[in-house]
Image 1: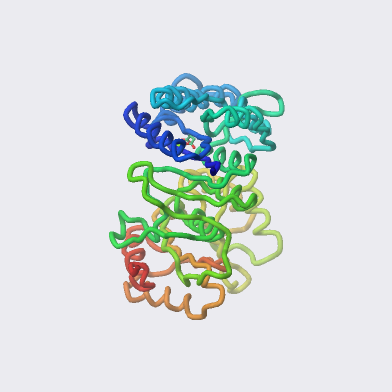
Image 2 (image 1 turned 90 degrees about the horizontal axis):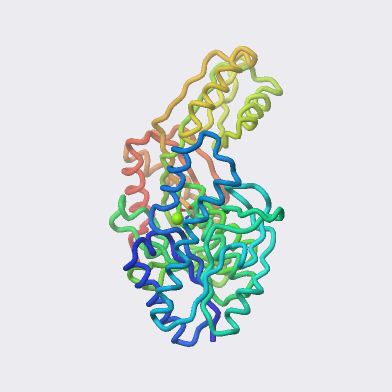
Length: 405
Ligand code: ASP
Ligand code: MG
């Protein structure tokens, strides 16, 4: 008998019929002799709707009340799913994050889990019942209801899998796994059978939205193997696990693009100690998350610094830098919203020469200009014009033969 944690996302339980379909699937898993713990998200777009309601009602939106509001979405879903399970003849009990023993810090709207005390979940399992836990929520050390942030239900599932020492943590979603490129851009994109936590984290950082990055980090830190799969076709999906030395590593596993960032360039700043520190401290003080940074070789004692920030932060970042222009002695500041990044990711890249050259050659053959470059041990990222990003992804997917089985 295996103990399985099953997470169902918003689209998986988007309406009453989906709820019944998911309940039927859980019931089948139970009838095969498994113990199942469920973590469920709010139905469909409910979280967005609650956020929208809050913005209609309030300009201040206190964190404590936001969390009480948002977690109501998961509360509805968990009760409905339990009702559907009862109809299947499966005894099931819903639990809020608090009841499930998920203890968090007090950082409302994006609380972090500090402990999991799943006694009630264990008791329910021992009694032959299916515990259904509201995702993305907990109770703070100050005993307030907290929300773990967007995508937090994945984290709930991983945390429960760890605390209960589950045999598997299955993330059911509206895609059938992790693909080696976005299938909307590359029709030949293939589902990956398996990839390492490190590769998944690099893919997340490069713009692949699912599964949520925080849950992958949590899974890696706690050694919880993830199985990302479809709640629509139910076929086996993608395993995300520790790197396994016995398996041959792909040189390039995936191509990912991202157009969620914009570029700022500060020109003609003095090439002296303290300039970059002053600039990036000012950005950090406004909670602006800088991603790539590039500084030119200085000419005649001055240099240019370019960096990327999320689109949503561009105007704030621009204002911050403009405000510092005179103090820094910079000549100018330019904002460029029309960039995209394209990245290749692969654990085998570490030991394989020539990957960088092959990527640059592929972009060159497409006539695509590279504006910035950043690398990690297993990732290569180029900043390019946003209107050629899809072409770059297609070309790289082909060049690295990712369509082959
Ligand atoms: N419903 C929440 C959200 O959309 C939590 C989750 O789905 O993980 O962010
Ligand atoms: Mg969601």
